[in-house]
Image 1 (cartoon, rainbow, N blue to C red):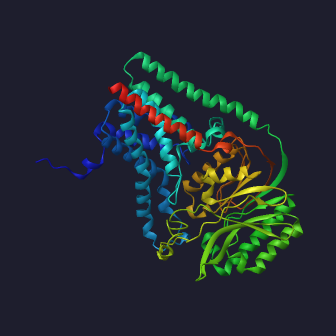
Image 2 (cartoon, rainbow, N blue to C red):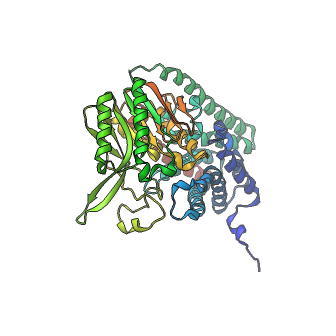
Image 3 (cartoon, helix red, strand yellow):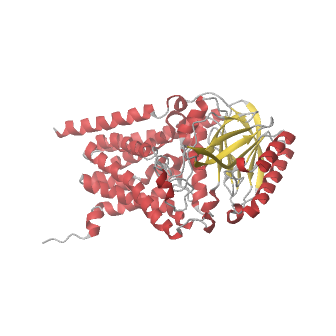
Length: 517
């Protein structure tokens, strides 16, 4: 009787073991803080080559993808267990199993990617080249939707630090960049696995053409986009660097406002036309603090300077007048009015438990999450001198929010966040890196205010023109342009790419079956 041990049922066959781990590790190194972005064009080659060489069963392909995903996401997200003590998690020891569960969940996506590719291509070269990038993108889109949406670390973000490789995002967004990266990897792997010189040469030419086109197009577009013209706006970006250990204590509330007042005065002295403060910089329910609300409105009037700041907000709903809390923000305008925006895409498990908006009893489960309610659909905020799309924290990784904004006339993206919970880990840098793609996808300036960093300005070509380092208190005032116009991606969104990927998968399936017959 043959005894099967647990690892034998979970791990892929030996020829796929090292390639899966190697590709996972190489992919992780493409994200901050190592940031070997262009390596992503080759990171998947070991795994893809091994698959084409071994031609495993769909089940073994699934195992290889799962091992790749575990290696990649552990390396990318290990810092979650290092949340600083002031994060005030109700059950601190829960962070380690939470990381493991998150990694296991995310690893399912590359696992199912290889499972579908195995069925679609039967490991024949041409069907593999068609299906590998298309299926990858379909699964990236899948994990970016719904209440469990967590599009952290999409493959296309590995190019965010390389403006010359980022520019095609104006056509098909970050998902299109992922398609290109996987396609180049598949072609290089196909070249290495090819048996005949013609196949090897065709794959080599295809990989070089794709990579060169990506760079040459991007290099030319950077120069063109940098010459865009528009009305100028001086925006002050505040990084208050308030200690999270004291921020939410009532006795320190006034000291937080002293920092807001001081940095608003600095912004005024720097001749700013808008000042931006980070997420929950005002640590209170703004409508329950009429004195502080009036103070901010008074400063906006007296300095003739709109003030955009994050705070908490609430309403009562239903026959029992249940309390609904929002992670909110608002622009205090010079005419004495306050225009609000509440965060719509909440961080799963961190800001709300999935399905808690539908079933109130779920909110009673206490892991230390905030139990926020998602905000309503919103027009761009009108600060007076500019209309801008607000992106609170995690919302910067959802291009559909920016697309809605530019279709409604937004001239600028404003991302406010509080990444101080992450401490001095790769977390703040990974989060900052992802919002760069939004500026390129829609050709708008993006300004980012983070409590403890990284605060920055991103140009429409994806270059970080100004930034404030982590854990530094500062205010920087920068001239940006108010831009209009719609890119192809702004007009059509993900539909063309989605349709193209579905067509590629169907074509791969057809070709693999026809050759088999």
